[in-house]
Every structure is written in C-alpha cells, then in structure tokens.
Length: 455
Image (tube, rainbow, N blue to C red; front, side, top):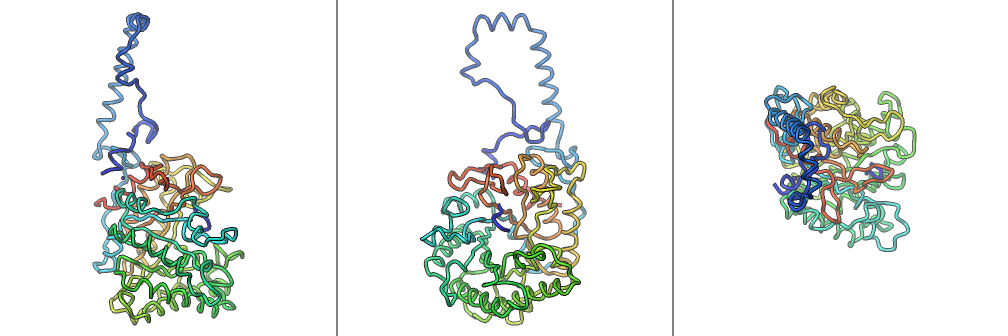
C-alpha cells in the first residue's frame, strides 16, 4: 500500500463497558477525595436520601445486567469481558499438511509499515534515515520485544531496495546490514519474519507489462539473488515474499483490471512470470535453507480477486527440497468502504449484530478456501486492517470477526501499522513506537483472542 498508514497488555488495558461497547468506564473520586466531606455536603446528602437510594438501585441493576451477560448467554456482537462475541461456525475440513500447519503457527502478525519501504526521500543525505522518513521513528529492539510480549507471533518487514543500490543494482552494505539487524531482533524473539521487495514497483525497476518485462526480471532476480545469499542460513522462521503489490502504477489499470481483456491478461501473466523468476533464483542459490524456504507469491496488486481469477498461476517449484513451499499472498482491506476508503461511500460502521460488513469478509475468504486451502495450498493475508475513523467499537467488531473467520478458513493475518495517528490520511497505528504505548489495546485484544479461539 502507498504510505498505509496484550498477560502484560490484558493486565493494563482499560475496562470496557458493555452498555457502550467499549466507551469510557465509570467516573469516581479517589480514596483521598472521598474521605473529605464538608458540612455542606453532609446536609445535602441528608436532604437527598431518596435520590441517593434510587441512584444506588440503578447502579445495582446495571451491574446485575453486566454480571448476567456471559459468553454462554451473549449474542453475536455483544461484548463479554472485553471480547466481542462472534458466532461459531461448523468446523471446515482443513487438509492435514505441513504447509497449512505452518500458516496456522504464524497465528497473528504485525507490519512494520512505512519504515524500510520508504522511498523517494531525495532530500535525505544519509540512506539510513529513510527508515524513519515516513513513520517518524527508528525501529528499536524494545519495539520488537513489546510486539512479542503483546502476543504477536509474526512480523512483516516491508523493504524497498531501489533507493539503496548502485547502477548495477548492487545493494548498499549499510542498508542490507540494517535490515538484517532488525530481522535478527525478531528472530531472537522466536518470531516469524517476512521480508520482501516493496515499493520498487516502478517502470525502471519492477513493472508488470510486456515492454518492461525483461528489464523487470533482470532487476528482481539481481535483488533477490543478493537477499537470498545474505539470509541463506536463517531457518524457516524467515519467509521471503517475492513482491508487494505488483501493478501498473499510475495507470487506469493500477488497482483494477478486466481479467478477460488483453491488458488484464498481460498484467496477470507478467506477475506470474516475475513470481516464477524470483522463486527460481532463490532456489538456484542452493545455500542453507533457500532450497526449502517458504516463499510468498502475490497476484496482481496482491488482490484476492486476482489470485482467485483463473489467470493466476502458482509458481512451479521443482527445485525445492520440500513440498508445498509456495504461499499465496493476499492483501485484503475488506470491506473497502469501512476499512480503507476515506472518500465517497466511506462508512465508519461495522456491526456484527446487523451483519453490516460481514458478508464481504465471508465472501472473499470462502473463495480463497475453495480454490486453495481446501486443496492443501497455503494462503496468508499479509496486510489487513481498518483505519481509524474515531470508531473504536466498530473496529473491535471488525477485528474480532475478521480474525475469527480467517482462522476458520485456515489462514493467518498480519495487521498493517504505519505509525500514523490523528492525521488527515490513513491512520493505522496500534502502538506508539517511541513510547511503546498501545493506542488501541482493545482492538489488539480481539486479535489475540480469536487467532487461537477454538471453534
């Protein structure tokens, strides 16, 4: 995406009111304040005994309602102990193979967004400053530890390389070293890590059109040959993702194509060929874990629509020393008008009780299950999320429903966090990277609960 924008966490998160589905809790004086009562206050209390009794009865009634609502009696969309209730579905048949179990083990993930993929920062004289150019913060080992402590099992580290290469596409040692350092911090926490080629999607580098295809292949294979060589000895906890959202940037075909048209077929075929070229060069490296490493391969613009379409081809992988090592890579900010759209048609409401928005999630996930997962082919949703529209209750509903269903259909998901908060653009921040403070712990709590909830 272009500039897309816990028990320690459970012990510290605010209490969520069932009546307001996540609004602020009760107010009240401190112990010190309540111990000081003026004569005027005593007189006032004596004159208003009946009112005080009525208030106490009302409070007791509300507390009784809250106590009476349990996970057994709650309805879908209710909130019990801070968790949005999602109706359980009958378990699906998920093939028993190593690849699908691998996806299951990824559990829930988080994107280090707007960081190493920052590009076009020509005002910077030090290439290492690109890391904080978009997000405003350098990545720290403390951040990685906090993510692990919060329950995140996987971290995706998007990386742009074209701003850090010479004329022969040799990657800057300083840039490679810094990427490897952060990857190492996550691996030291026993997390899974994904690295990729991200914003290199431009005509001079990687571009899915026939007239740019040969040059694009030369570029992506040169970049991936270097990445594969540097990270060869890192085990299966490190996953390679061929490309981010390969598309014809700046055209009418950038985010939507007619898959039956000549242009649509060209776009999809070029992505297929680029995926294949990258898989081949990684396997040809022949070192360390590169012959058996999991590799993610997206369709056109990483849309679920364009991997579900017949034109998408899973890369062939005959040189792999283990079976089924290609993962279908998908990004899904669904439903779009709620999750990503800030323009015409935008809505800030997602409601499980009224099923507003739920059908869109069910729809695309069921299609991915039918085409891939039911056939034993792994699928990972590398980016999802709902930007902040001052609608935390709806985003809690969304997070609970999205993660429950993804796990139901045999997938894992990674939330997109670009460290943007209270701006005029795409605000996806969950954690303040400098203070390591969770901004929306109630949303994270839904993901942590449902990524391992039993059906």
